[in-house]
Amino acid sequence: MSENNPTFVLSPGPHLHTEESTSKIMWWVNGSLAPAALWGVFVFGLNAAFVILASIAGAVLTEFASQKALGRRPTLMDGSAVCTGLLLALTVNPNLPAWQAFLGGAFAIGLGKMIFGGLGFNLFNPALLGRAFLMATFPLNMTSGWATPRPWFGAPLDAVTTATPLAVLKEQGLEAAVKLVSSPVGLWNALALGFRPGSIGEVSLLLVAIGGAALLARRIITLAIPLSVLAGVALSTLHTGVPMLHLMSGGLWIGAFYMATDYVTSPSTTRAQIAFGLLIGLLTGMIRVYGGYPEGICYAILIANAMAPALDLWFRPKRAAVAGSPS
Image 1 (cartoon, helix red, strand yellow):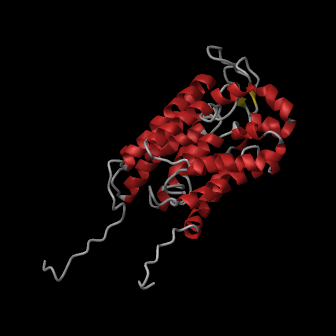
Image 2: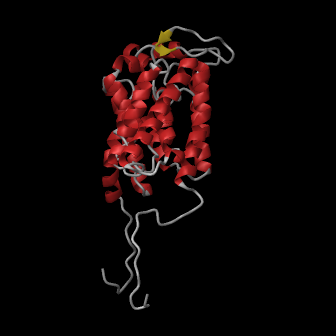
Image 3: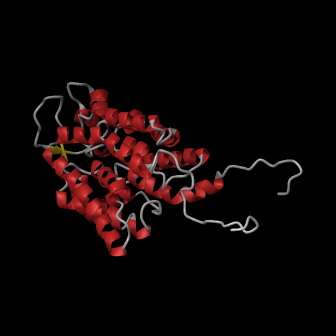
């Protein structure tokens, strides 16, 4: 080809290639979630393991079937379907029937990801869409009969079911919520370590934080969104007198570090990410305090996902104007 007639090759991104591939990032996320998942199985029992396996199976099989039906190259080894199924499982009731978890994983991939064109094209976080589907379809199993965890390390499992701290706080007040979480390790230790009723992967803030720290060390995520989410919740619940209980209860931390930081459904600029995180935190607090639902992080993130393109537009970086150059 002559130098006077250059050839331009057009192809979809990414155009900048580094050692961190999509597959590596996804498997790092999966690995960082493993300690919280194993702890959830330990404190809640074998049914939690069935829920995790069923949710992952629903996600993986649906992605495989969708790609076969569309004649596309299978991409199961990139770990994204496993990540969706695992995240979904960690945000649901450990007593959820396994077949319902399977349906949730299938919905998350089929209607949350593949219908938009696959990885990188979805508008909303697929795992949270799966959770919203389960909440709408099986509300009783998703919101009641929470498993009572082991009261301390080495204690036997208790078959009694109960409510979550946030549900008790909303319906019965602070005293009842504190009594629910009380254990030999103390209130705040019980909340941080995971000796409390809740979803499978949200109970141990310590293990979620360790997993998030691993992602930060690998530069897979930054602190802009997680810290903004936590700040938004603190601001919106400060007037209740128990902001720390809100900060240490529910799925806030797993939502802030793992769901809200999803590359595809969050803004790309730092200022937009801060606004995105604050919006999620404020909405979460408003839903918890004023809404009829004790938890709010799921719907707050989904609402903010819809705002992500607008936030990138509003907070787009300004180009430096060179003197004398055309606009």
